[in-house]
Image (cartoon, rainbow, N blue to C red; front, side, top):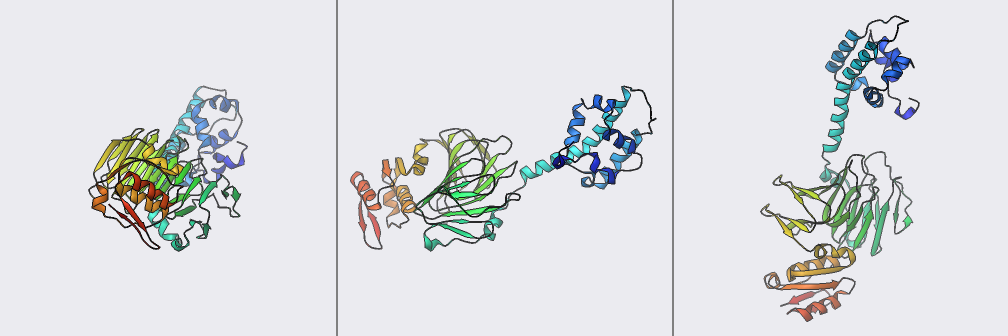
Length: 393
């Protein structure tokens, strides 16, 4: 093999060879006709691509493997007529080598795919943003805080570790040779969009905290969210995309869906627009698969899970700057308005819960005009003073 980056064959094992294996090593290094015939065997091709060295084997496995090889490897006359037995013998030796090596290779791959990421520890090591600034904040791997004071922010990460904000390149390159975690804080009254290095697009709603890597691993893509996001996940069958909240784990290959996991809400939910999603509740360990136009709801107080048929637009319209409402309680609408406009509204929860609202609200309107529209179609009045906003039923 001429590619130096992948040159991990027996040439690198020579310092570790044992007495009695020289015949096999020299034969493998040669370019004999016998080897050419045997190279048609898929096992030899697989073996030459394994990137595992002998020292990575447990000692007992090493001893057993070399005993078997030495038993098969005997001195060979310098001149020997080709026999079908020779390639068969070496094929047997390769199989003996492949069994323990392949086991370690795939067990390592499985470990990489199943190893849990401790997002709680990651978030504890990253500094908090300054909520008083009211700006969208990106916390970089070196704990540098990058404040983005635009109302409409778009982040784009590429394969090289560089990223852009609203089309302008940031003079900061993030090392992509090891996991580098970023934390995005989107305050109430703001929203943003991210294109991740794999092409996945994420819309981040107001009042959301998102932890994600600058560069995804080859076999797994993971992020953590507290708040609300909508995703269009780039297809990659080799690397499932996993979204975690404090109570849910959502696993997909390529699809679009909404995740709502606000700390102060009674429910966490997933609404699927396209594709298929597997969801596991950390409380019950129950796994559910949902289809398009279904809404998965977890009651945080009881751990009860329900599936509902819904109009997807009702739950994802926020990413396009409006609210689409269909028999929504006025209480829920007020909560959404508080988050989007970063205001506190005084209201009677019992009374507003009894009022159902439907329609489409443009979130680009100022809050006074929005409340005026709501008051025309519902039996409410509103009062706006300097530091007070109150809804009366």
